[in-house]
Amino acid sequence: MPPTFELILRFAVAYALALPVAWDREHEDRSAGLRTFPLVAISAAGYVTIAQIAFAGSPDAQSRVMQGLLAGMGFIGGGAILHVGRGVHGTATAAALWATACIGVACAYSAYPVAIFLSILSFVTLRFMKKWKPEDRRERER
Picture 1 (cartoon, rainbow, N blue to C red):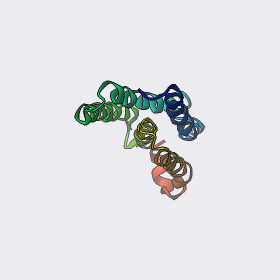
Picture 2: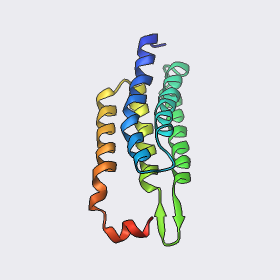
Picture 3: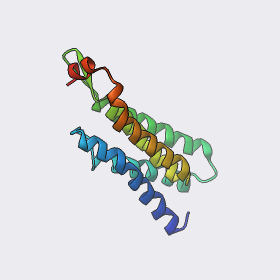
C-alpha cells in the first residue's frame, strides 16, 4: 500500500485539478459543476487506487476496474446529454466528465504531468473554444 502522504497527495491533486473545469461548468450555469467534477476526479482516483492495492500484481484485474470506471463514466455522461427540440445540450459537460475522470486516474497512477496537462486543456477548451462555435448553432441549442 502506498504511504499515507502519497494517498493524500493523489486525491488532493485530483480534487484541485478538477476545480478549473468545475468552475467553468458552474460559471456557465450547467447542472454539473463545483460539486460534481471534484467528486468525479477523486472517485476515479479512488477506484484505481483501490484496484492497485487490492489487485497488486494483477494488471488484468486492474484493467477490468478501469474498464468498469470508463463504462460508468459513459453512463453518467450520457445522462448529462439532453435532446431538446432540434438541439442537443450537455455534450461538452459529458466530455468534461470523461476528462475529469481521466484526471483522477492519472493522479491515481501519480502521473501528475498528464493530469495537469488534461486539466489545462479541458479548461481552455471549455472556456475559450466556444467563441468559434457558430452563433446560430449556439442559439438553437439553448
